[in-house]
Image 1 (cartoon, rainbow, N blue to C red):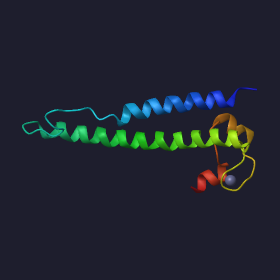
Image 2 (image 1 turned 30 degrees about the horizontal axis):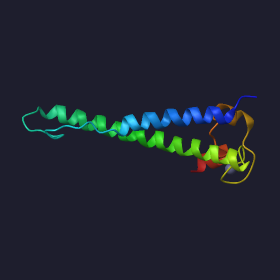
Image 3 (image 1 turned 30 degrees about the vertical axis):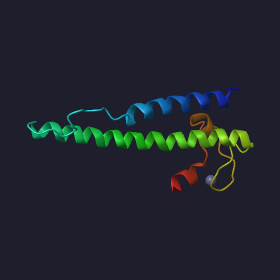
Image 4 (image 1 turned 135 degrees about the vertical axis):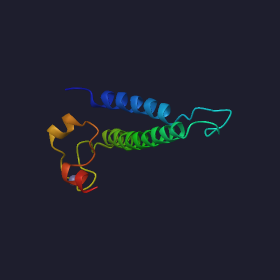
Amino acid sequence: MTDVRAELEAVRDELRAELAELTAVPRDPVGAVSFGKRVGEGTSQAVERIAQVDAARRLDAKLRDVERALVKLEEGTYGVCDGCGVRIAPERLEAIPWAVRCVRCAAAR
Ligand SMILES: [Zn+2]
């Protein structure tokens, strides 16, 4: 049997590092929007920023699940759905070790 806790902790640390990188705003002493730049530049930067925010949001949601799964390991409820209390399918847990809801509840979210 693989050590789920160690795996989850590794995933958690990885996610935290990724999030820290994504949310780190590069300091621009002149200001993010400076005049005299071509319009296209500012737009592509804005688009990139939106993509980053989107990625950060997804990573954050996953991090929450991973942290919750670790708490469930602690509580002894790991593998039991947070939504309806049913046992999460072993195949699902194998594919997604941080799954804290069964397929049905996860889809209903
Ligand atoms: Zn459920």
